[in-house]
Length: 86
Image (cartoon, rainbow, N blue to C red; front, side, top):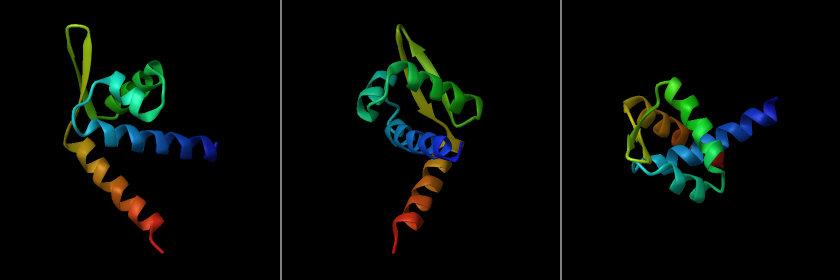
């Protein structure tokens, strides 16, 4: 269970880093090496937790980070700095 949660956090970190520029879901999938459906699942989870909003324009879905999502990015970066420092 712990390993699964660590992998999930790593995926969230990479996806959230990609999302800071309001990217398309397909671009995030390509950049993170995950499938489109996997990214969609994580997006729904993050949206339910209030970290982002999704907007559909035609057939394209765009992800937009809100204030809570930007705070999460800052916290993850800070945690990553602490974990990687010697």
